[in-house]
Image 1 (tube, rainbow, N blue to C red):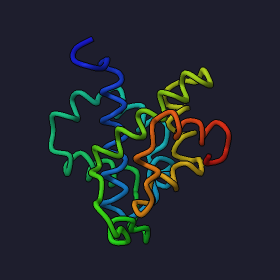
Image 2 (image 1 turned 60 degrees about the vertical axis):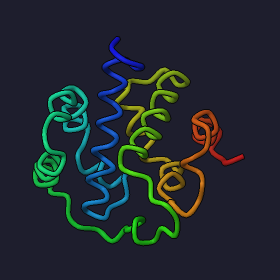
Image 3 (image 1 turned 180 degrees about the vertical axis):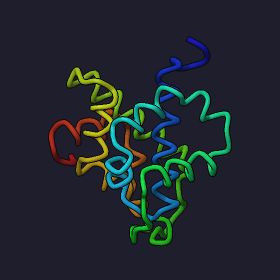
Image 4 (image 1 turned 90 degrees about the horizontal axis):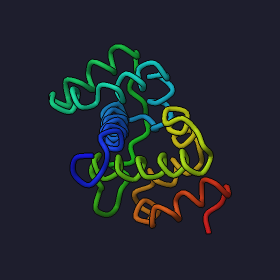
Length: 151
């Protein structure tokens, strides 16, 4: 372990941040991006995150957008935001924590947990920057996912 988190946790953080970056760039919901990339590409990003992290995120995102044929959508939560917009790194951290919580609670593989998180109703709540849900404590976000409701 180097730093405050393990290497694999940091790789997951980068993976989630790149997903967020691609989604913003293509104006798609996060689930659309994750599903378009598929398990093979997501696994590749996760396994090679330390290398991709050293490269320009615009170039890396463009490569994956082209490879997965991700088209421009009409989901623009950035323009719709009335308040301060969290960075793609901020949201990457929220998803990383949720995914790690799912891994532990459901005893799932990281990639399966990633797909479960992004394809859940919680993803829509996190991506609503006019609410404060993404600022909630990580355990509250995980509980919303596990119990299927927001307390």
